[in-house]
Image (cartoon, rainbow over all chains, first blue to last red; front, side, top):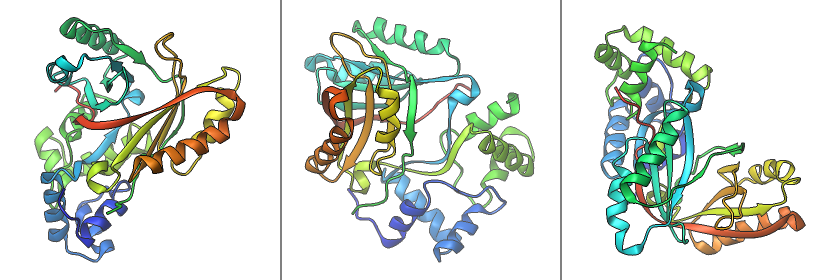
Length: 152
Length: 157
């Protein structure tokens, strides 16, 4: 992994939310961080290219638009892991996917624009892979605040 | 939410343009004024349709190399009382109640913890364990070993 600069760290620690909505938002943030607008834009470009950041922009809560997020898992035979990963990741409804150490060894989040989209995506994955999908829709959200500061 | 909001979401779900006036650039792409983009984005933010605007880091790349999904089988009559307390622990980044899938999956409480090592994550899991006390019948921690995909939401154009 690439080394983080002091500016990178500032960006990661101060820019996981509250990006302004104004005509020159990068200039406004850059001023707060004591760097130039160009330095900020170039740093963001590099952090995205190096995959230190996976995205920069708005995070949508699809449930507020009538859609759904569902966590789901598969028990994938080791010999088929790469093949099944490709099949699952091919669906645009798969927002994230992680390999985890457990008999249920593939955990992914489905994000669909309609409630019915989840069942369709689950059926499609079951058909494409021949494996049973375990769906774990949330029944209650106790806490969500995914912000981690740089630790390097 | 109307068709223009939808177009705005499709145009920005992959990220904001890295240019001096990003909202104006989006406006040009979808055929509305930059001021209208900003007004609508603010309304989406106020309405909670946008959770936040900013950077999404790859945890591994910023030093959080151990990421554990802790899962707990908590008595049904206790989980709604204990869940918010688990969620309130400073190191828990998400916490949900989810259905069990018996017999394969007895767990109904999920809490994500992160650390620089598995030892750090398991110490955090022990704190959760202590908080749950007798209400917890079984638990596990599932470490991620690879990010297979992390694009976020993608709705169709």
